[in-house]
Length: 262
Image (cartoon, rainbow, N blue to C red; front, side, top):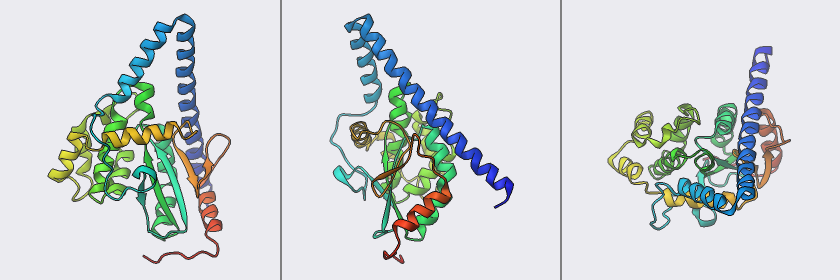
């Protein structure tokens, strides 16, 4: 590996860690604000909680929870990517507005795609909306709904990658604009059909996204991205990870196991 390649990978890891630290700091500031509100008075807490609930439910709809086609796992909250029968599973909790998720995606995409395409790894993606709750807005919700619409259309992975390739600054809630999400769908051949357009505009999977978010909030994890390999956390605070290490870990976990050919 050249010195330039090593430097780029090190820089990517440093950016990813920095983004996670900034996200944790935002969460700490938010918790501090709520505690301070309790000291000032119960009414302030009630107002703050009401505001937060309003933000997280904004545009959510009140209909029944409908899962996208092919969703798996408990309550059908996971979107699968990769071959059935792959011996290892990568679980990803992500928020399309989350800068740290974008850094992980950009740093690990080629490795993850390669492991999935070779049948060594299957992904299960849980879409959450932490940034909507922390910063306000509906961009996380609308982008996740659009990604679920793409799943039903059989084009989740391609659209998932397009969303990250076009992620706005998290302070600019551009993903709240459904027309922008539809413009991005033009980058995935065959995706923007009348059915997909209606699904995005109607928020068909909003309730499903909110249920996925609630599941994450009760999981014990508190930041995105949260990455698990075969149920074990492999990336997080004090858990540095490189693409090379991920590939090595998957190969070790798969030793002696059958790899599906298609």
